[in-house]
Image (cartoon, rainbow, N blue to C red; front, side, top):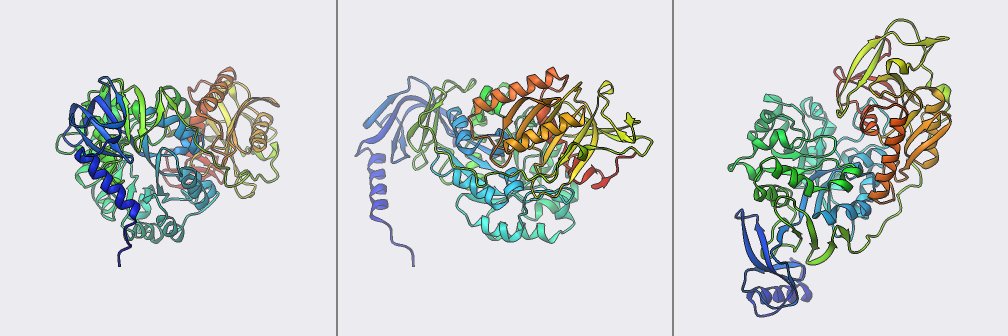
Length: 581
């Protein structure tokens, strides 16, 4: 038997009908605005009536309201929706993230908490959900599909089929996040397939992640139920995946920027199956350039029709993920509205969430609440000392990781190292530095060591506890003393980033929440990052974003040679290899 309808719900619906029909005044009336209609792809100078957080109707016939705003020709567009994002890339807590993106016109995001889940497991996902309660930002979540990412590293947690099943039942959980283990699908790994079937059985979506997958293998991968892909970097790749049934999320973030290459994908016949997302947005980029408003500006500057760009950033995402009546300004839809200067600069003047002004002039009108982190510390180092960084030399050439500016892939080379007393030393004169990954979750004492080129450091060390995907400590440096000092600085902070010269910490950024998130605002985090980069340059570093590059040197699913706490990984053969060539 159906549950009885509450009297309050019935009264709200009756009032909505009265306002829509013009027989009762609206709560708020936006007049003299140019509204973007995502259904027709048109603009119209009109009025917008709002009641109980919903759009009651649009048109010049709406003239009565308790409050009237004359927008003087400003544009009203639906609140922007990020189709795929990792909040953790901002390095701030959810409340501070909301504080940064809402004034930029974002009113909803689809988040994959994959990073924090690799540290805290299900507790990390619940922390993201709990932290986003009662925010003027709708945070929808997908359950990470690959925790840990591989067997070649030590993660802080594991999420198996039973955990996936429990998490899928939570409110605001939309389905299974990017299915990165596409080889597991193709090899019929039971654990991977179980997760897919659990999401499908719950009537929820499965997101994809299959760079360059093609042909019959792509058919098998999509055919198990995968609905999207955001990893396309080439036009023909995106066209093949779209023709095979995948919806395409074009990514324009901080680490990967694919708009320019993929915009020709969009046609009148297929635009409804394309969405825009950021995947990652680093603190400095959020502060300086913005969020989805930046993606809109970029898309339009590259030639995409502004109305089409808005459709891809609002209604398309809402429809694909089943986000209820969001993503449009139309009767019965949530009154999530960004008021912008024009359809090129997209300068956001004011933001409404559920019909209430929540941001104006680039600032959130009310500070969101913050939750304490789920655990006090996630750094558990065992018997760490500079001696753990020693690399024995057995003679001959050794493998060297080649870091590449602005890339998450690496190259590799072979060199005869500088050695003394049977130990390999850093050789800054040849830009050959020591690299180490220190396990920090379980106190195993694991330390993986290697050599790396491309940083240009002449002295000192850089360290981070934000290191994809398992987020162990990663440190690069010219000498063991500086590297050990940097690791200990992270331990004292409970996680973070540090730049060290000798025994002195020159700059730091504490990330006490899971060793990857700050409890401070975007501006303060950005200031600390800029100070870290300045010190890195002073130490000789030639990379524009050394900590971003450093964070990906521990990711053993991206070619070519990477380092984890268990050792060097040849990504091509997907196995651990020795340092000796």
